[in-house]
Length: 419
Ligand SMILES: [Zn+2]
Image (cartoon, rainbow, N blue to C red; front, side, top):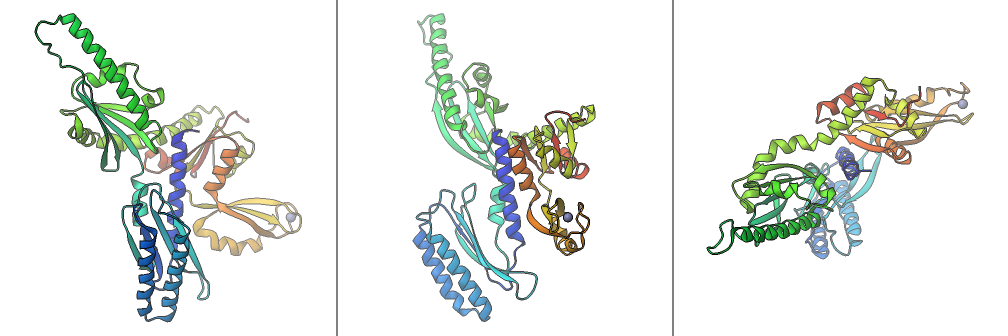
């Protein structure tokens, strides 16, 4: 499976876990959120949390005070398990969650190591968990490479959200175009080309070092004044995987940090489109099979599940907007199993209704709920078992919107036709 596929999946999982946390509520102002940046010392954080514990003595409501202090104790217990703060920092969420009824409550603690660094240090105690900084990370996870170059020098940078980071400056050592008097023009030209070739080879190595294993890299843009960048790209200087990541070239007036800034400013609307190009083309591929009626396009929950179980899925398309449970019901009389897909929002109604359902096989037995799982996770598990390519697709494009609205959010391209 492609790197991009893995990334969208990780991203989806991270987003889902944030959405789940977002729904949790405390009875009072008693849910604790702690954000710790990578450079922080654990024992400093412990000291601050112990101080917060002391401050909580002043809370008037006895229950709230107890809950806040319990939450802090739990957070500290979890923090103690780390010898140092992980490279991207830590977020800890702890507190007493209010359930349906008065007495229904549960103490929970979640520790999240974000996929990108947390740059803030703070403690909050609110009615809900504070998740904005993590949602922000989710939005700026994509990385683009930016390289500006001419015959004199080159600058390598990465772009995350609005932030460009300069990684490396390289100078070419290539002599200028005008030769000193007395040299033969041909000899001078040959020497210059030799230097240029050596410089291009060096640049090729830097492209590999910097971008080949860069996580979440969505593409590289090459800028610079004049035709040197085109000469470089035309030559055989890039690792083939890096070459595939080149999105476009941009003419700039400068090299160096100024040139990087120019590229970023000029590429903004272009990058918006790139981000969803992959998603778009996957849905288009599905639509094409559907239009040609070649028997390879299939959609709908039960249909896709059936093909997955038959190991007959080449590409699995899942809309990120699908918010449903995959529920396994088992008949208490004959053991028959039935699968139902239930919207998150309809779960409580469904749970009540289950008692009144009769088994499809023996028609008498009652069902009990054997297993409940996020439908997307279920699809992903089955997809992996079937060795399908899995694409989790947003609704940021027309095609993604169509997958969700017109095809129920789940579709597949099968390996072979079954009719
Ligand atoms: Zn039965």
